[in-house]
Image (cartoon, rainbow, N blue to C red; front, side, top):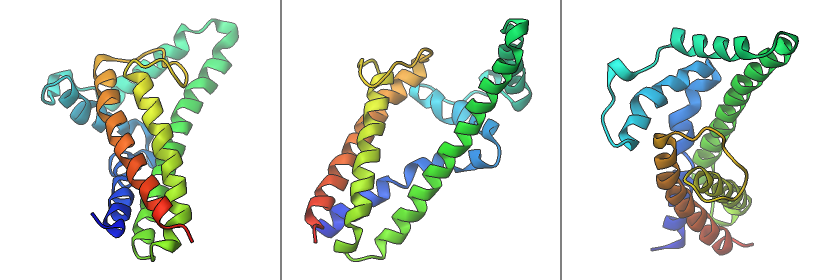
Length: 177
């Protein structure tokens, strides 16, 4: 496989997060399409409308989390929910930036992609670690509420991100100026 092909493959894998999460910039509750249509595949199973959550149910769950807080801590609980949804949107923005950068980099020469591959090595390696953590490997923090489907996603996507890390690392080394 040529270095150019390795580079393009590494950049192409970096498109995936935006393809899944970009819509969450507009409305973070639109992550429900992932919950309802993508995660059931990792059960394994097929999406099922009777088991899907809608936006009204999502908002009720968030409201219930606020309601569960002691009265003196309601403001902190509301701020916590705000931050969760805000970070959801910022994550989607970062994925869009990766997407645009990947497309742009595909038009550059291999040496001009050097720094972009470094960034994608770091991001892919960290994504791999986080996914491996939710798959059950105790490193890089603790996710206190990993679902069965979330664990299965962690297994599959830790492998995906390892492949992205390797491809971008090889391209980074080959593109040294």
